[in-house]
Length: 400
Image 1 (cartoon, one colour):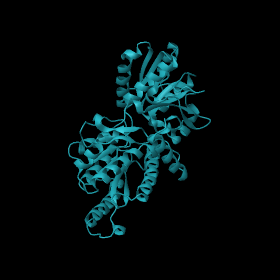
Image 2 (tube, rainbow, N blue to C red):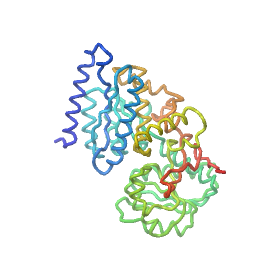
Image 3 (tube, rainbow, N blue to C red):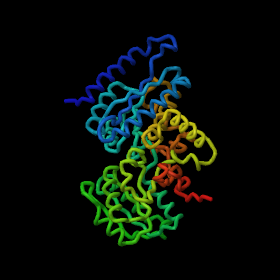
Image 4 (spheres, rainbow, N blue to C red):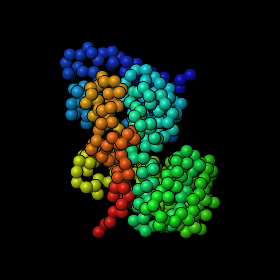
């Protein structure tokens, strides 16, 4: 039996059907039916803070698009559905949406929800733009992934460590899928020729269900590393942070951008590492980006956020480029185009300035960003800002 969120979604889907049925009846632009793009994100549950800030950002984008002519003179409307952060609910919602043949779907704010729905659309569509970087879509499929590849984040982190002269490194990863993938990326980088001068002095794993990682942190501290990569899902990171804090391990700790959220920074404030770094795309690096289209775009989008009293973090920024890319594709091929035409329009984009980087989809990786779009940031707790610590690719940013 469908849960309550799916029952609520049925009413919304009915409205989508009605809109589709009326799409050919209007003769005046003022009466043109909206172009509805479903957005399936967690609006309730443990990840609601993420879905709700995504919703706020996309409402702002909707206003911006409509102020500039919409999609071929038809207004854009994002239709939000709540997957509660649950893969089963996400599958139920996506199955219903696929039957309605929307032009594209934005969904999968979490790695688990995206992975659960990818098989439903990979081969036949519609276009699914997952709002997480934690997946690897099949090249040429109808699935795209927002953000930089985690493996590129690790690669940039190693470059940053080299430039800082941090040669004695430790790694702490979880034993779940997120940690397993990170381990593979870390091992790959330790074997890269440019990293031969780096020494792995400790490589520890911990179970996501463990109440602490005290033993692992103690062994890392005893090995006397100069810096550490810590990789796990947001809830699991809290366990590791507490153990690092309890053991007074005061070294630079680098994590992924999964917790680049003001909500999480505030929740974790009491036990965050004193030297906390993040690997992410260039969305927060406008101040050090070279002059050009991406910097101009970042500054314009941030001005919109500030004007709407939205604090830009991973919530409103993560879906921004994905949504604007889908809008550009629909403007090119028309809102009634089929899934293949929409996918192909995205695949031909190159030199496209987003807030996360400059996109080139010719690589066929279904994300359009590379290691050049990765930057390292340091969290400045007192100022509550992520300060750029590197240029693109992890190259050390030298300040005067």
